[in-house]
Image (cartoon, rainbow, N blue to C red; front, side, top):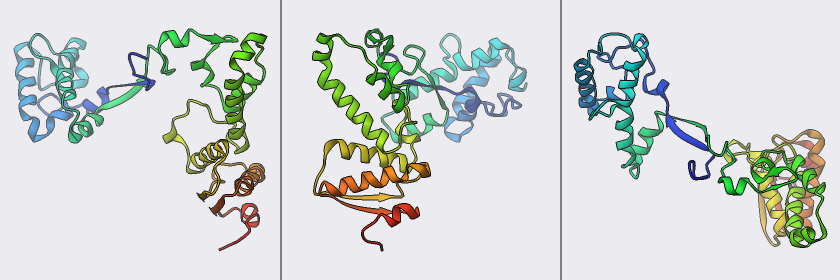
Length: 263
């Protein structure tokens, strides 16, 4: 996506973080980023410019007219307001302290161009059985597996896509085997629990058929329904059967009993 650069979300200024206390006036420091000693001149400039335009500086921000609020944020003429201040800071975001400062006053909103699908219009215009790739990744692993299982292709399409479909279905099958049928393919990795992340790594390891490897797992059953524990045990055993060593830190009795050596 040309607007969000594939992130799916846009970082925008959060008015509630910039002006957290609307009972304060401009003189009392309503604009929170400019209450710091280093930003005293910015606060003084805002008060001067507001007074030039007849905007009261001792009235609570919550009582401001819309045009006054717009002036504070967007500025007027040569004075660029709060938004101009943050735009200038953007040029220095190669500095860690600037990035930290900017993050304090931002929020993330869905990208209006790609609607969190992260791709450009050309990629999203290609559809198979009515769905684009952006719509497919919004589905759960189980739903995507069923979608590809039910694909109706012509003989030529099958010839073109055969290896690709086999690879897709194989990877989806491994995710199903580790009990991740409920996860959507566009799920952000930082939202995964420790157990879910480990099971995704397990699925990746199974798909690459690693051998002679030591796997150390810290409670991989976290987030897994009790009825699916046996599936996890079978996966761990299959890793061992390939010639790997699997070490598991676990509290679940069923998984503990399946181990060959207990410490």
